[in-house]
Length: 139
Image 1 (cartoon, rainbow, N blue to C red):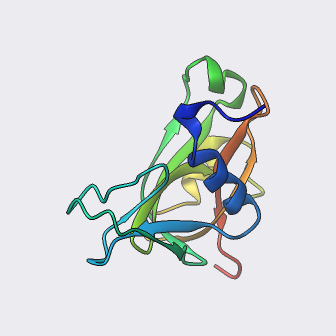
Image 2: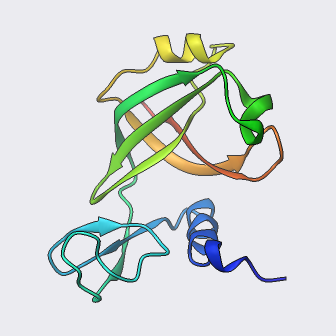
C-alpha cells in the first residue's frame, strides 16, 4: 500500500534519514526546505536539488513537554528541540542524555548551542517513526 498523498515525499525523506542519508531541498540561492516541497518557500524557485544534511546540528531551542496530544501520550515527558542542520531547521525529540531518567533531567543536560546528531526512532505511543536528536559523539 502506498503512502497517503499528504505524506508523499516526507515518508521517503524519513526513510533516507533513517538510513543515514538525510538531505535538504536547496534552491540555487541556498534556501533550504524539506520534502514534500516542490517550490522554494523563500524565492519561488522550482530548481531544487537534494543536498546532504550536515552530520551534526546545533540546538537552537527546546522545551520539556509534560502534556501531549494522543499520538505522544505514552512518550511524556519528553524534550522537543529545534536544531539547525545547514540550510534547514529540524524539529525532533531529544534523547540520549543518559543517565537521565526523565525529560526534566535531560533538559538539565542540554543547552542552546549543543551539537546533536539526527536519526529516526519509533514513537513509544504508537511505534510510528519519529525524528530524534542525540548528543553528538564526543560532546
